[in-house]
Amino acid sequence: MKSYDLVILGGGLAGMCAAVEAGEQGADVLLLEKQDELGGSTVLSSGYMAFAGTDMQVEAGITDSTQSLMEDMIEVGARMNDKTLIETYGQHQLETYNWLINLGVEFRTLQAVSGHSVPRGHTIDPHQGIQALYKRVKEFSNVEIFFNARASRLLKNEEGRIDRVVYEADGESHTVLATKGILLASGGFAKSEELLKLFAPKLDGSLRIGSEGNQGDALKMAWEHGAWVLDLPYLSGTYGFHPSANSAVKSQGLAFYKGAIMVNLLGKRFVNESLSYKLLGNASLEQPEGISYQVWDQTVMEKAVHDDPLYDFELLKRRRLLYEVDTLDELADCIDVPIEVLTETISRYNKGIQNGEEVEFGRKSLTHNYGEPTPIEKAPFYAFESTVAMLATYAGVAVNSGGQVLNPYSEPIPGLYAAGEITGGFHGAGYMTGTSLGKCAVFGRLAALGALKTETEAAK
Image (cartoon, rainbow, N blue to C red; front, top):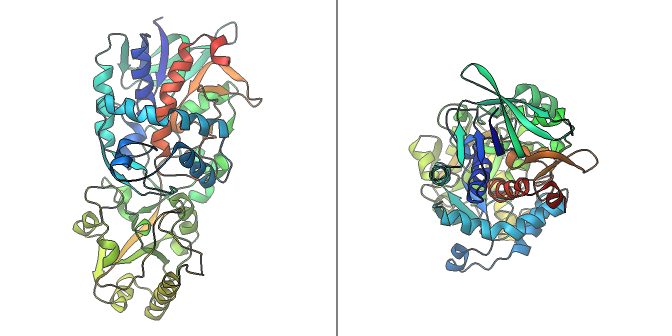
């Protein structure tokens, strides 16, 4: 049986950050990737990462702080987050941002995104980010990556410590020993119909566009050994995908964070569009057929951001996914809603915005507490058919700030660590854009460091 200090399950952002950190510490590391390539859910994401106090913010004249970031996370999470995890993220977020830059991860733009009081959505190309980390990993002689290696069980030694992983590769079963820790970084269960029906039956009508490897394998392995789970009641889909997104091209647009409104098939608004797109997804699924339209005007269109995964409205236009017309009557006809209802909806919205706050749903910002909505009145007018997709689950095993997996009594399970999407407790009842990839990077590093400590040190 081969032996390593640390065995990591999963080669997304959390697993790769853990592999780089452990490699830099001189540990012998094995990373098992179920698929034939790295990336997992990371490369399907919009590429936003939530950081505060960065050089990009300073250059843009944006005043921000770690405290403000943490307050937003707790507010968006409806105070159901684990405060210790939030504080740990705050303590390490800026150093992690700089650590990624030093590894060659390229941050491209800075945007105002869901849940933030100021622009702090730092965008990366997820493929480029994973490849930058992979480039660093390949420089280590002490780090190995096995592809097409599916972990199936975790085993305990006689002292009750989890120290072995059983995995399948090349049609055979193998067992590997981890002397210091096993780190679960294998994502969630967005592609497991079994687990989605069990924990999120309300999402039956959502598209399934998560990573093919996200079947919840490691969750089951952790449950077998007594891992506690958190945030499952708050599972939500992601709003803003075109219904064609279950194909190879996953078109998404969040024009409502630039000033669009959302209307259902009756032509009526049904929610405050400045909320987290997870909450918007829940509201959307309650509408007829689970379909709605984002509606905006040229004022919003001019806020499009080229090559941005959420705000490149011109790309949606080039893909022929937008309706574009000169009058609201024509727009109502295009999306097949009653003309008089749509015009009344927009008229009532415009009047509220001009008065400082629309009264129907209380919208007074573009996203969270940032940005001022504008009336929808400048032709041409646009509409984008939208629905909800299950992309990532954002719930899972309970962990402490060192990445140790906990049992129902908040006691560490010896030898077992986790980071990234497989963990729960961090997001709470909501989701703030950029915190998923952010926690993958921050806690991927911390979990690796925690596993490499002695059990006594890790418990302190």
